[in-house]
Length: 212
Image 1 (cartoon, rainbow, N blue to C red):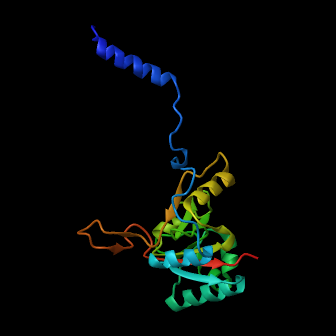
Image 2 (image 1 turned 90 degrees about the horizontal axis):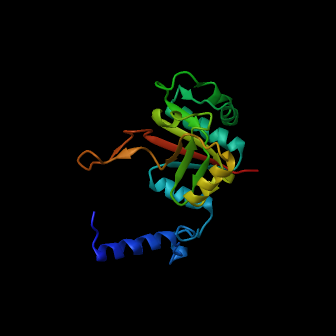
Image 3 (image 1 turned 180 degrees about the horizontal axis):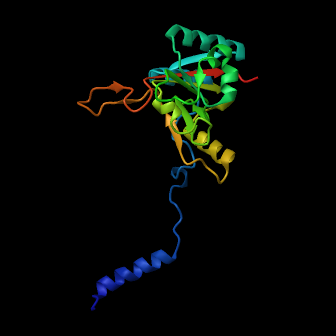
């Protein structure tokens, strides 16, 4: 195959370029720094603002006793009879009134599910969950109402911090699924009409408990 001198000249330049590493011209643009403005208020306040903008329901609790009172009141008010929860420590935290309505065998017909989380992301109002939790992949998705119980020490400002925390926690055994749930499930695929609850919970509550 005959190669013209001009083409051969171009190929020589390409081969030479491939054998020599080129320094990154703008190293600060390669993901080393966040493109977002730093936090200007407490993470609790930022998360509450962003989460409620997304139609989430936020409840702050100073301690375990306040959590039990608030959670029991919510369940009694809505007359939820079937509470699905696979995490024994959360049921103990929620109190006897909630535990009395709990089961771990019938997710399909439950009124509400209760889970923990890996992290809460303040900047986006997102709940970070994973398959590494006792609740697994499905608990937060199939119930019509999802209640997440979290502590203030699980709050991070940005997604990067959450992912870094997951790497540190699980090392080389990252869960097979990591989910960022940002408010109730919603879609506008059909005639650009917003519909809530198509692919997940219609209502999402976060009970944030002050860590001792």
